[in-house]
Length: 369
Image (cartoon, rainbow, N blue to C red; front, side, top):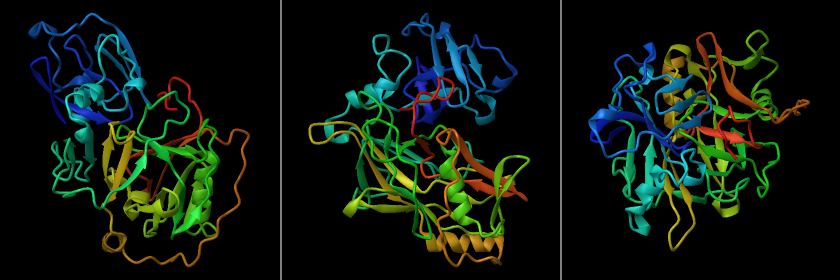
């Protein structure tokens, strides 16, 4: 998104999995910054620029006075920094130094309008994706006229003293509407695994044991999926269309949110985000605690037709689902990136770039809880 800081304009990455704003400084020097706008400290006297900081992300970090990055691509996405919109308690830049972006935004809005809505698009080749949307205090009428089609869920504070990330209990994964049971949560205060809705990563992360259960259930004697013992990644037949979903809510509030088949089995040269919901993120006000609204944007019948048109007929139809026995590991809850590539095809799951965590992770794996 386009953002103004100190009278200077920049493109920044919108990240719901972090809580800080940083912009690349003109003091930064690297071949990775070619063509990227940089903040010029001498052009404004309104900002305090002498406070060091360190921000850790899932992959990479930012340190110093916004003049050093590690493992974070700058020129690849044409953006000059990251705008984090998670809760203030997750900020690495302390509240005593500066308020978080989310706190500053919500402080200027009346209670009922303290929300932002987000739809990530599929046209990744455009600098400005016409199928993406970000709005504050209102919905984008191109995606929803009102909240009537949204399902609302309270934000989970499990594993923390308060709200830190946009997270909610994940009931199950499904294949053809058959539940694939997940490992129990080890986060205090949560009966269910916790899903973090994070726009800052393009993968679904989860414990190895759950990843293997999912793909072993899909597979039929190795005819549909298999693990590549060389790359240690799962491979999927290019023509295989999987009807899978993530389930949120219990009882009358239970709802499946389907994934586009191409999000689970992507063509190698077309690796891209395939996101399937319009999401509203609501802060606390006088009537409710923080909550997340989800509205599905994926019609499974239409997307199956699109998949068939692009991939051809499925010669190995999946006639029944049997949940395979779990394979136990000495460290069953270690995080695993869920993706694979096979014959220019593979697997990339996405809902709102959902990240699953059961445990506190070490510092190098961004501090979700």
